[in-house]
Length: 147
Image (cartoon, rainbow, N blue to C red; front, top):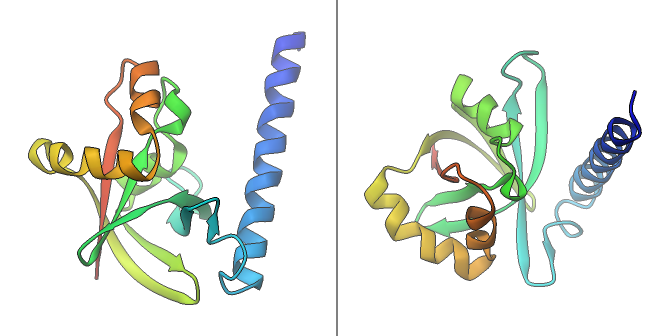
């Protein structure tokens, strides 16, 4: 493996460890720890792996829009969509954990009019436009409707 390949592999391993720790702390504390940081709010999104079929849990920033939860599939402005979006496209039904509350949702990509309405709102919570400017793909805004 090339030095760059080793570095990327090491970075992915570190990110996986940080994510696993975040999920564990969030769950063990009932959301008292890990649900917010520096004014940002996090939920746990539990999806079914698109290829593996295994349960996957990802801590994500979110905003609410009435009774719905809104996520942004920014993946840090990378050229590829995040894995959790692939999972939701394959199996749109998922579970959301916010603090001590858990509920089932069905995910959908916001249509163009809904995205135009939600985009400024999500950018108030976090500067996603910076990521949009860094990639040629349109970053998906994902709406989670309660079941």
